[in-house]
Amino acid sequence: MENMETNISIKNLDLSFGAVDVLKNLNLDIGQGEFLVLLGSSGCGKSTLLNCIAGLLEITDGQIFIGGRNVTWEEPSKRGIGMVFQSYALYPQMTVEGNLTFGLKNAKVPKAEIEERVARAAKILQIEPLLKRKPAALSGGQRQRVAIGRALVRDVDVFLFDEPLSNLDAKLRADLRVEIKQLHQTLANTMIYVTHDQVEAMTLADRIAIMRGGLILQLGSPDEIYSRPANKYVAEFIGSPSMNFFEGHIDDSGFATQGLHVPLQGYDFAGPRPQGPAWLGIRPEHIASGEVASAHPVQMTGKAELIEPLGSDTLVRSRVGDRQIWLRMDGQIKPRPGDELPIGFDPAMASLFDKDSEERL
Image (cartoon, rainbow, N blue to C red; front, side, top):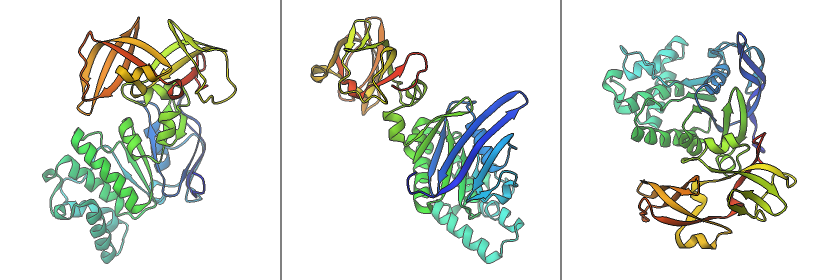
């Protein structure tokens, strides 16, 4: 966000439905041309926040600025935004061209300009051959492209996406995800994108805001959120399989947990080195197995329980004592259930969290 002009500013935003607080004193600045993803599980408030920015929900308290203008009480149509929903919401009786031009004709945009905007959007989204078809004759991916095109022809500064890919199958979702990223690189508009899919978030975002219970728990680049999660919830939420956790205690000699001692010389503490009960987390991909495990400061022996071949990778659930530990191995390595695996990791790659607050140490 350094040296980036702020395009959207949300200040002390509250939203309550009766006695239920849905968003709580939320503050967020989004840069000009930034791709921000709101990520979280169902009910965390991400779509609600998007609808507040769009003007589809009336906020309880706070202010929303778009392009330096206070739009807190302005109608959605006056906010300079284009919105793409999870459901395509196309007019079934109109052609693709009719769907793209409908809003512009209502806004009394001159005919020549409408034609120019539609041609530009159709070219960017590669839907030129579809303009004379009706939605019933389109695939799900084509319909979602038309829905994006309808936002695109509005010629606005800010695009809001509310889980636009969740109705598509996995292959289409991956293809359209690439196209949305390409679209952002082509247009350089500010985009806010809501999803519960961490792969979408990590691949699309300049920054991710991870939400829970109406609060933003961490706001940062995909790399920051993955490498230095601010708390245990974020650490668990990002990554599949989830981070492995050990419950233990930090003292002068390192981190001690049942049957295991972890030296902490290479660990980068967020503040002064603490003492006391803590969680240590290590991602499956940061655990080495086989011969290379012996080169790591922390070593154990696990017994393979469950093997999940993914082609390029193999996921292995192993048992160390009474602990279950996931590791991600090279796809060429094919252990069998019951095999003994030497495993090891470097504490510099781990994350430590306070036992009670669950904040990063």
